[in-house]
Image 1 (cartoon, helix red, strand yellow):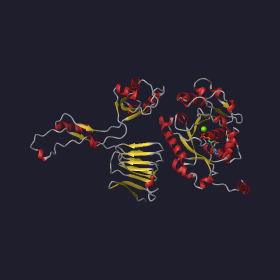
Image 2 (cartoon, chains in turn blue, purple; image 1 turned 30 degrees about the vertical axis):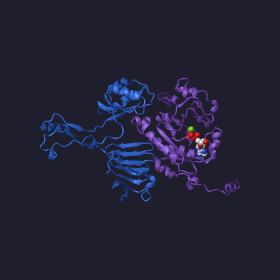
Image 3 (cartoon, chains in turn red, green; image 1 turned 120 degrees about the vertical axis):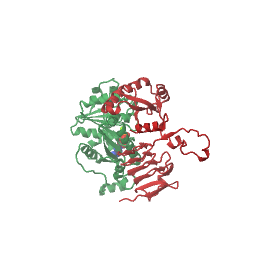
Image 4 (tube, protein in one colour; image 1 turned 135 degrees about the vertical axis):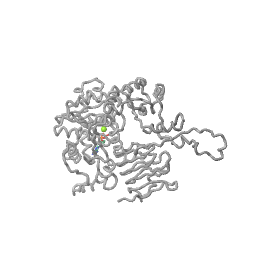
Length: 262
Length: 271
Ligand SMILES: Nc1ncnc2c1ncn2[C@@H]1O[C@H](COP(=O)(O)OP(=O)(O)O)[C@@H](O)[C@H]1O
Ligand SMILES: [Mg+2]
């Protein structure tokens, strides 16, 4: 629907194209044992469970878990994935030979980890608001790049987040409705809410948003951070321990307030 | 169809093998045909605790590799009807445990047995992953101390993400806590975590609390599962836990320090 209306706008503006930033949700196929005779049997079972959901769905192959010594025919592997009507479009991680083979069959290396900040990617001047001093000169047509801010759904986790687990809410908020164990890590580019005990690490504003906050029901955290300003458990102070607390930046300093409950 | 149980913990030395031997024996005593499998390839402790180390000819790995038939490797317990042990190899390593091989053996066993109990090695590497992969139920063995609780928490995460049930989107593996080597006196002094502290972090149902007991070492030295020592607290606690596992409603005991009788106080003073 959005595409239709913007296409007509484009026609009205009489420009041949429009460049836009957009984010897509893609499935990641984490590959543990590509040579297992069961691999495609099990994948086929999965696909059959929701054929319409999977048909021609773009997938990113994640090779991060493969051992350095892995040997397998990537070309044939991709063909078999395609045979199940999945569309491998890119890949992540993996040993060097696997990455090379993946690039050779035309898969795009996907950046893993944190997302690029949109503001920095594009800062094109708006041609409609030109500097008055430049008005006399021949206007230099600036490339018009429109960024459409797409709402990203909040990541909601209802299971306990266990030691060794890491949850990253990329470009959005994170809500955990149970507890977060010591040794677990929550990351969000937006806010973090924990409606249980927060005993692990919580890093809000992970890509630099200084307005992000952390809210939790019982503060027992190992590390708290907002936009890189952090505090370790030793510095949290007993006034806040096991209390409902919000954590935020006040004049650039990590601060905590008790939440009024009840 | 048989039920597959994994006895797991993440950490070593917490009592997985002791608990596997006790549990398998307890299930067999209640009439269930039970086999207990040693997944700790290279160490081989289970057959010692079960007292059948001199009867091992073929093992789990031989069966996986097709070097022996399953019934050549299965050892029938001499004391208890319905109880079998599948020992592991002391000379191979955990790479011998392939998923297909393990699955083949479990499939064959499930034709015959009510319960298949998998004694996991420590860690979260291949051996531990293979022992939990096919499980229907997980018993998390934890000691009342911080590092053991942390590792158990980790294993719970692994069960929720890397077990067969998780990978295939089936009903999740059921999880219960067995708190072992619990010393109520040391807990009272604050040297060990309380039951409630552990439950607060792990947030899974409590299957049982096994007290720290000399009887455990005594029993394993003579190759007898401690559950057969019916006068020891540890034996009774295991028996209760097996009952709870089967759905019986049994109150927890051995959680608070026992009142010392005059006799034991005198003994202690003179010691
Ligand atoms: N309840 C207990 N009381 C005293 N000692 C115990 C108890 N449970 C286990 N042990 C001892 O702890 C050690 C490790 O037990 P084991 O069952 O081999 O652990 P794991 O299989 O987890 O490595 C053994 O020496 C065992 O006798
Ligand atoms: Mg062991």
